[in-house]
Image 1: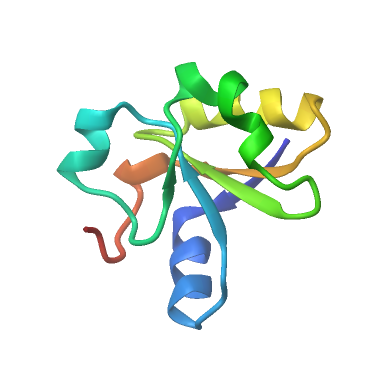
Image 2: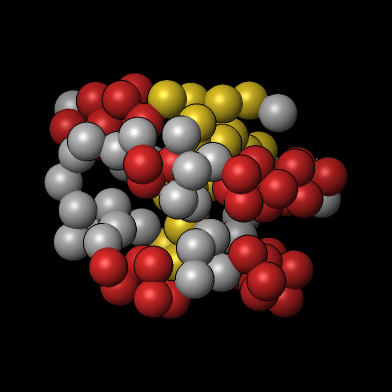
Length: 98
């Protein structure tokens, strides 16, 4: 599984790059603060909602510390998706939040 640092995600977003970020945390966690324009799919619902995703796009998975997003990335990768895990999760995020 590929990983990307929170700093690299932040730099790419600040440079205007369009990234496909998916936050797999629970609703209350996302409401407390999330990366702008992120898609929220709780980990427990990922299997039901994977049909909303495009296998031709790359996705970066995000959670609180990197554990749940790693699980999500492994799951999606096993189903033919191009995914990366944001190492350290939101605990490592220093960029803008909503």
